[in-house]
Image (cartoon, rainbow, N blue to C red; front, side, top):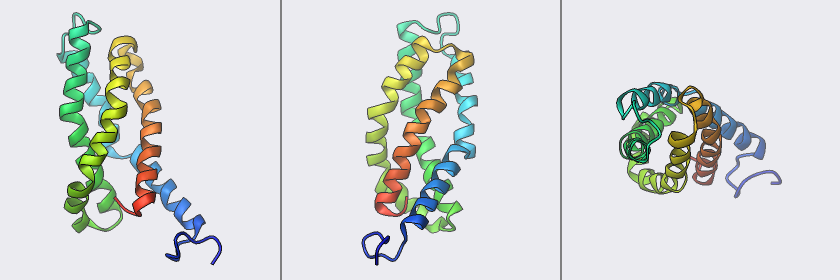
Length: 150
């Protein structure tokens, strides 16, 4: 039938609606909104007297990528699956998707954060992160559309 994906019976309009819901949910999710607290903590605790020094920038980027990124990713998988009414899918999603997601994460976010912590004033940090997050959310929606689920 025209308008279906892969003969699976899911119309393009329904698939687009699901992707839009996933994008909006991720963007407005509590874990995403908690980023403000995370970046405020980094700015106040990691070399606040020299916040744009090379050492501070590298430390903040490393902390973000080694602590926040994997934790945020796991919470993201939990949030999406629970919201979809599939709490039993949380652990399998993390087991199946965390490593590929982190590989993609490491292709985008370290460079974004080097720019962030070196050049973006802390009062504009969340705005910058949210702009990059739009690209990241679009990627996550694409990833979900490819497999149908997280």
